[in-house]
Image 1 (tube, rainbow, N blue to C red):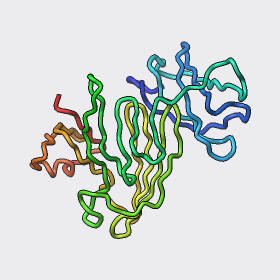
Image 2: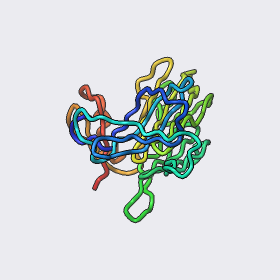
Image 3: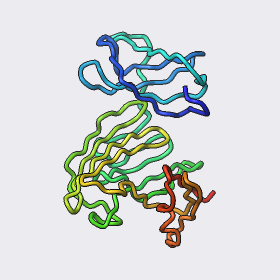
Length: 239
């Protein structure tokens, strides 16, 4: 296991699942008895990917793990884990553990986080590809592929393809976990700004190369992201 605090880290690996195993009833057992549910994403035959999230209490270091797979057709044993997510295939409103959002025309939209009182606060209006050729503030285009690839107790996976203005071909793969999501994007011909985030609330942004700026809609820090060689950015609410 990696150092620091790896709790919540997503792990995926190639795995040849036995033909006798129930792919909907899998768990990973770690040293000390800590376990977590796993998702098998099919590939060719029994070869596919095993995905899970590291639970709290997994020892750091060279920890051995074991896959617990219930045979198909067994009754009265361990019940299959149920997905806690609400994921319609059309992406109309996706609900996860700490947030919800919409995939409107395959664009991440209306991203809201849950407040302590149970209400939702919309923090991002959209995350888009942004350029002079395709439009700075929208991701208008023709949707050519949209599919829910996987849904289970670990994550939901969508893939999309769309043709933007100017003939640019955008492809994306979304991995939605209980408390976060990951976006993998590519564009042909190449474009540099594939994930421009339109924030709906004020906040503070920091970057890996150092420094921070206030996000308030005024536009005084437009060049903040272009200074230095930052490998990552993070945005925080005002509180």
